[in-house]
Image 1: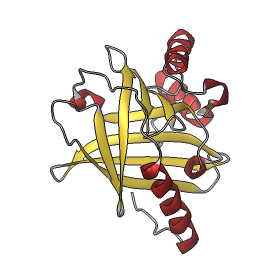
Image 2: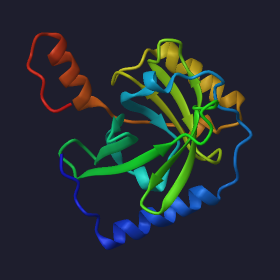
Image 3: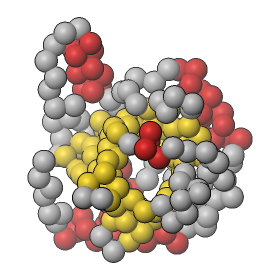
Length: 193
């Protein structure tokens, strides 16, 4: 997969968003105490998020975490408006400053380093609740493009108790990924999920 060089205005916009996130007040929400980061590797589908400028209008958003050349890398990608829209991909490097607390990690993109916390994960590593540096950044992630409604409601209720404004959560369309998953499950060929 090739990554396109971002245009100057996209770089400036993203840079300003990242600076804002880095300067935002840190939430007093602790990360999960036990996390096997190796089990966190793989593809995650973004099911819902609090609105943020760098993902505005993006659908079919995924995050893929893997090891590459001895480093942990993350590739976040999505499409503007629909799967036929412009593809946006950001590649970053994950650093875990405290190996005893792997659920609190830093993601480095270009010159910026941002804190993220996994604040909830189910025992089978199928669903996760991830927060940024402030109560303005929250993501609900799933290993599949369709998430169990009870699990979703439980994560929303948990985020609400932690002080996040869950009334602003927006669900992220995964229609194409759902269709492709259904096709795979019915015996169809895999196509660029």
